Length: 632
Image 1 (cartoon, rainbow, N blue to C red):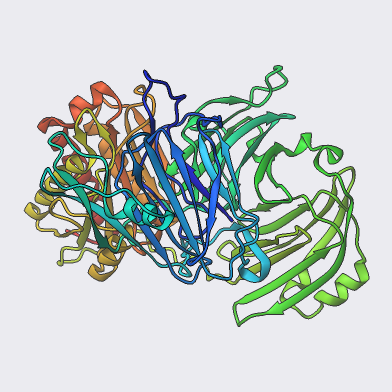
Image 2: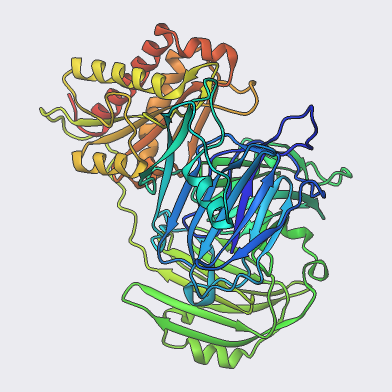
């Protein structure tokens, strides 16, 4: 387990700015905890020591970030069913020296002797080596479930700060003990505003459903290596199914519950710097808790993800370039094999090895394949006997020259695969849940109905969730305005509509889906505005996930391209956005332009552009309903 505190740190002198420590975020998988802000480097010096103090009654540690200012609100996170009980961060002192203090409280029986405090790339990391492991000492490394993992073993609430005026003459006494120091840090702020008459009072608020950062893995480094890409970080990496795009050919792999350091985002990485190939890679933060790696190559389908023995790094490499000796240090053999039927749909297979393994997982629509790079031998007869008369009787193994062993079996497209690795990397647990066949909704023209169908319209973001922001322009305002215009056009034509939000209100992703399911519409359309780090990208995109949503995406995108001729046509994307992934009716997400592009931003806020966009989306909806849902 690792706790990560991230801060913007500069060498401190009389002329330089102090460290800027921002608001505290948490990881509800109990793997990472850090403060999101700009990136820099934290240098340990005699003036800026990096060390922690252990205290008892209660069992806790604290450490100080010297010459620092807490820019965000001070917070207290309280955990349940976790070895960590509480984390606090606050401005501890401003005179004679600016200090931010972090306090972590543990269960009384937790041993704090082996905690390590280090700095990596501007991040202050608290490494907790001996926390109790969950999942029978297995960690999930691959999961193609459509459900977002829910780490329900931890409940969190927070205390945030409100400014309250107090008399000018109020004084704060000097602390008499370390306990007084800690308590003072959370009861009184020594930072005053311009009138010198405020302090911070603590108000308890449940924020467990509102926080956006839910991550198990923090990526902070990449290295082009041997024609591939080595990605490394902190925490526990998990991947989902690799998929492929064309024009140009790309291999894409998502890492759920993963956060990318800003320094590694959206940079084109040449995998063969010596001109051995033209393949490139790019890492991006696909959504708030999903990282995406994209490999662009004429041989994109050849790339494989290779998992390190400690699950701390991922090596993505063209399978033609795999070199057994460069991947492994110890040869391993298959030791034992176990099969267990969990229920009518769920079956489990455990492979046990004599030494830690290096391996790759490749899931296709119709098969599951494992490449065990350092496995040299296995007892074929024992394996056949163990698998006989079980769900895994079709599981096969074969030796690969110079590589190791390939193992796998044919499975159905809708089967859900989860693969876990033991912490010593000497066992793999494969769980397959039998899926149902696709229930593809009829997309053939059908008889006209006299009843107008219902449409759910979803204005992206809202309330405290501003979405993209550029030059004082908020995504949430544009999406609401355009959505209301679409609603007006549809209702004027006699169609029934329901709006997820009709004002500036925050609605969680889960509640958006629940709202749509309760309304039982014929289709669901979510409206968003795009954004990029660079100001160059512009244009419109339409995203769908389920195959039964593709026709809806094609029709609405066609109308947007026609009506918004000044914008670049960026095409259709099969994307795993939550709201279009979890809805059970045809559902799409429209990206109606780039707020980060200066010229397009000017258009997006204009009434003319918003009206044209609304008209295009409404016309696409109407055409789809008439063609496929029998609407008049």
